[in-house]
Image (cartoon, rainbow, N blue to C red):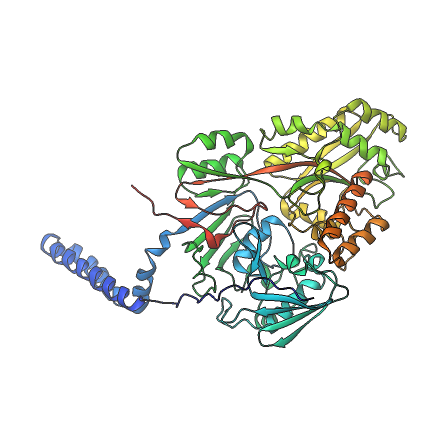
Length: 586
């Protein structure tokens, strides 16, 4: 009855300050000797009046070189060369790891924080802060924690921190609670052992724990951040701009919509792993303009662009100075409809909500020529899809990948049958990042041609994402990055919303009680064959009900300086711990 993962070897942290004394002494002596020689030559050539100003400055410089702080700074100078400069269109929004569950947030937050479990370079589950885990009874999982781990402030990681963090992630207003549905309690067994009590069996609980960050309880108590930031309420807390994790990098500074600066945490438990990279510093700049991001890459101002514009991918692949990596996305983009309100916000139809009629939702689907958008707008750097989860997700049926045909005549017919022969107007919300906005513009034009007069309404990330998580939009385009196990996605997207962590990203507030029962049953089904069959059933029901219109899955493309080597995961996450930056050559 018990199952356990493989156990990771213990990794000894690199001792801080190793060889510092020797290096600092050599550097101090060398540099002071050079300055002394320069000084003697200058004394023989320069005018007395000039020396009166120069001499004190040179003497001060020599004294500074013998100061311990100067020696320490000099000793780190060669390693500072391994500084990666990244450009992306998206800001992480907050440093609180439980406040939101967005790709662009996780890219940064999980350089600073670890989870109990992680993934290897093949995207397979592996130990992180938990060395091993086992199901001790059908409703209890026991996790043995990694010893010798320290937070960035030097305090040791214990079971108390793990218990606190899982409870914090479970509690409102955390947007990570949807991953932990079914967890009743978490308790400390020993200094480095915890148990998770479930309301019903869950055979794949460990799969759900990636991206549930472990925080320091004492630090959170000290700074009044025992609960997650209320991101939708625009709450400002200490954890928004500060962090104290156990991750490979620590936060230097977060400047919203400008830059996030990280530095290597020398005490990270994982640096002894042979996969580890050599980065000392990381700068992640938010550059919304496509042209500016690429200009920065071409000029050498940045080393890596995570979201190059699609129209430039072919040119980048042909550029001998640039390396491009590409991979199929495990996530995808959708349109979803308000199905909660009786009157559609922003529409000229009053007293009714057209999107509550399946015929209208089908009309939207038939009106969109997705292959044309992929070809002309995304320049072939995506795949049109009719599936609601990628085939890379366990249990997703391959046959659902076939889209309904593009058929504007059928779309108009369906609108007439639904009682809207003259169509109706509606706003479409989209984030104001170029490739997303361009797709939304094309969709709006196609819908308008069949009578759904669509007005594009774009907004920056900090305004767009609350509309998504609060379910306030009438019609919205957004993406979802799945994990290999389907349950998180089914629960997050398709289950009826409630504040306890169900349907957290069900932006249209779609509700189907029969679907809810199946999704809940998947969570507790221990047999993987039956589980896959249940996932397929849910996704076919979703396809029949059409609460979303599936659009496309991107081909993930990262463009980088040839000095950079890294691992590209299918969820578009960058693991800085594995990045290697070779020295520049003249």
